[in-house]
Image (cartoon, rainbow, N blue to C red; front, side, top):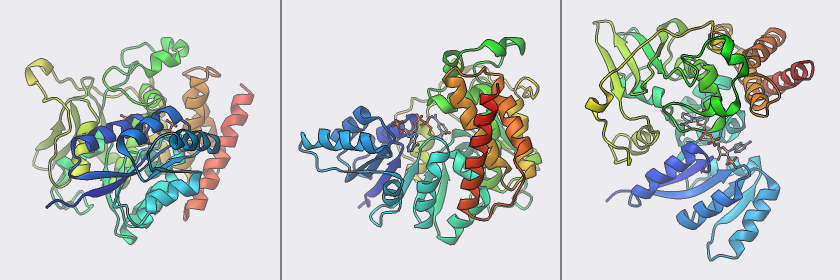
Length: 394
Ligand SMILES: NC(=O)c1ccc[n+]([C@@H]2O[C@H](COP(=O)([O-])OP(=O)(O)OC[C@H]3O[C@@H](n4cnc5c(N)ncnc54)[C@H](OP(=O)(O)O)[C@@H]3O)[C@@H](O)[C@H]2O)c1
């Protein structure tokens, strides 16, 4: 008999959260939704409560949680409604939970993701920002508390699937020469450098292959997403930056590759649908049905690969710089990027101001070692303040 796994989904109303619930709905004999969380989207979380009947629903925002609680009172659902960051941590670390999908967007996801690792959960990590901001201390925490970490980002999940079975975190002894991290190139892959000045948020969010939340869509358009993923791959697979090569692959069919010293390259392929990596991680080590249609190689027909253009997409180079500098620099990069993306989406600055703001913040923040989560949060706060100052003077 299968044991039913109890899952908390942090960020259930987002793109990853919804795909996770879709996979859960296909396997009622395997998974039970213990808790779901959101920031403010009352309407969507209410309908999720009605369908999945979780024990807890948490809204970060107090007013939204009050609205949800009064809406739930008019139904026969037993879900308990909570609010605030401590409640997010509570449902991520609850003793009845064994699996946590970390799918809150941005730095806001770090505290509940830490709480899940600290209590030894199976952590399905979509929130790449946790690793970008606090890679070393998060990986140490996972080891110390015997948590299990499985990557949800399609590229990292593909790398995980392409690595040797018992990869021990040493590329050389595993016979690996390089990790090839694929990138679609985003909506502006073929745009001229001059035209980027005037692109709109709507254009930036119109990703050619993936349907994602707004923040990651803009990150894909600037290629900061790939930069964040280089840092994520560094921590997940203990790969030095010069062993992680970004490869533009416009079709988004090859989700990443591992190159071996004997000349072999192992890749994972599939249609661009996040339910594949989600189902892989949720079912691991078994394979379970995800709802994703089979890859039709005859329809795909061509697989193209190009080198990235670092001058058109300076965010990619900034991420490599932050990784090389180490310490608090990736956290500064991440915080400045979040403010830059938010300001661009609110039409307060141009698309090309995004790398300019991040570069400025990275220049004025002093490099420091990161030893604790508080150190990370201190840099995060300072970098956000510096980014806002830069914007005010624009
Ligand atoms: N989408 C993808 O295909 C994809 C692929 C790979 C990795 N990822 C990563 O997965 C994470 C989620 O991405 P997404 O595209 O699913 O994002 P999204 O669609 O924007 O959803 C974000 C989720 O986080 C919640 N949230 C937002 N701000 C919050 C805060 N301050 N505190 C607590 N919860 C908050 C949102 O709640 P509300 O709905 O109430 O705002 C929503 O449930 C990101 O780290 C992203 O980089 C995404």
